[in-house]
Image (cartoon, rainbow, N blue to C red):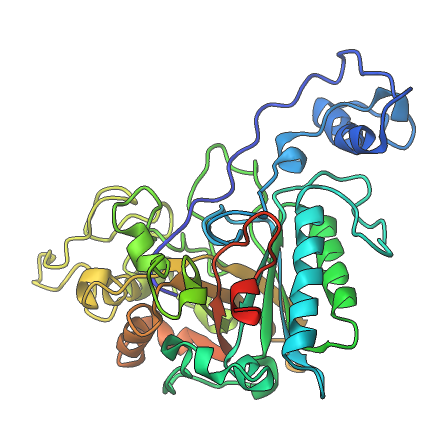
Length: 428
């Protein structure tokens, strides 16, 4: 879990007062109705009112920004990479069905792209919509598609498989479940509403039809927008502010680090990125036995505010040489935040965009919880791999986590208007 971050989804603007007159529903189109319905219960609840949406639909107020926020499907890059962390996420991998090849894959990506475009706009799916998200707005929904190593042999496109998609090396800390790793196709779904996210997951699964079957699926979450006084770096299930040094889109070398250049090879990956996906279980019972000071030594940052142990605020540069009165390094030599710094790894950097997860408890009552780690880079051999190798050799955090599943996926650039994701590969 490298020490890099992406800002949480922005804090919504203050809601309109529930006492203001609401627009009449008479004569409104269904789309207009969907853009106003569903928020009344939320707004009245926030104002202390005792009457909810179901009781007084005629007083529906406009959606809050949480529901109204929309991410565009078409663009230079696929959605779900540079957007802020969302409150709910689903990661799902598919394998092409026996007998399905390039033709069936192209038809599937065409269906998926059409569905993603509609749902991200707050519209119903084209066919057999389940109405799960009927009352909600787009809620910052994003749907992202990628190709795994095996996809290219299944579709006869081996010559188009990028070298960067070669399997990741083995790491000594891995305890990987192959049934929950890899896959021909990968879909990342994120939204700021759980029902909107599930609605998209269900639509994507149904669209797969006979062309592909689910290999594995994982569910995650983050803090909901608006639950902190101001936007801040997210905390993980260990209670640590997680990801302070994430590359930022405002930095001059951001695109170079995260996206394949427009002139890159293979050409169908222009403006795309590579996603490394890891299910990292946190051994929370062991972690929570540590004192706060011991936890901070493991990470190299204060638990309260994320500042480096060498002093300052969260964004103050870490002083790797600072020592205490006894001559000991203030930031321990094996601290996680020290090891993951780009300047300690030949400049290697990646954009982390994870979700936390909790899948209940095992037979001994130990929580199955941790991080659905998703990181983005122009080349995993220059991003994830060197950092993970360094962590593998002596990260203090390694005794409190376990990598249980893994995948690497080529995520092509965004689809232009009238195109579907992957069209340049499948029809090139």
